[in-house]
Length: 319
Image (cartoon, rainbow, N blue to C red; front, side, top):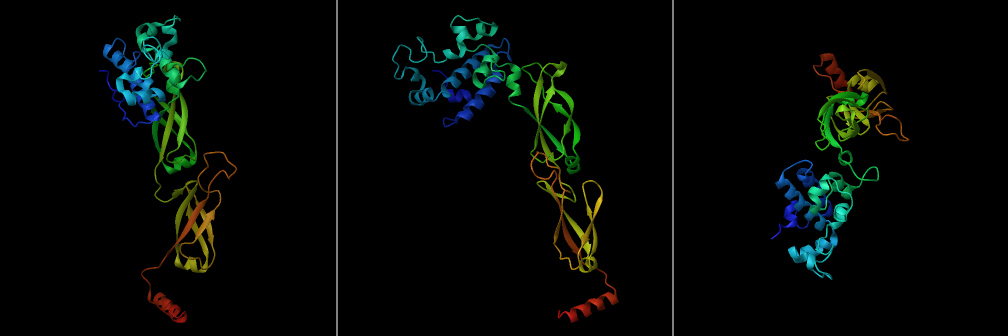
């Protein structure tokens, strides 16, 4: 009995079309003859995967398969062999050139029974081509950029920076992995993806890469989207009488913040344009703001005169 199609693709019977397509793409790449030249076991597995996908990716065929199992082809067939052709082959469309007298390439000869003309036909028939014609190996991999994790400090996210990263290779195109210096633009945040087209070794083609950014937390400033937040310690006397407080920034400098008399603990002042650069172009200001929150610091180790002063204040204010 033929192997169960769901088992062949490694998906449950309630798998979605997306699940089936993802499983097929993964397995087809793993077992494709271009990747396993001369491996008869891989060749047979590839044919099974292709057959399972052609059935489960077609809603009508899948419904019949779910009802009738291995005999689905003959369910309601109006002609010998059921749908597809005189031999009941529902996959003939996938290899028209090989089956109907068209020009045959080396892979057509080797895999005509599977209805596949090679890796370009395999992924071209499923995903299309960037140039509107037959998909190539480069097309396949450019459609799915490789993710490369990159970690930066908040200061580097503020100014932009450069990193040397390991770019994955492309086994189908014979491209080896390599080290490449890349630019991280100002304004990136955790989860940001910076897309680059890394030139392949030898200067032929490119490998698409997404730099997936993680921004480390800062010990003093906290990021809130495009804004920054910082707590500013203010002596009690300055908060009561007014004065200046020093606000740290990611530039390494400090801004003088003028406090009015009787500034309350927890009050927040917004310093316009002193936050993170905005990564995306918009109608907003190019940078967020810096939110400085006052943290009043109470005096300790009071002298006798200071204690007397506060006793007098408490008495006068009805404390």
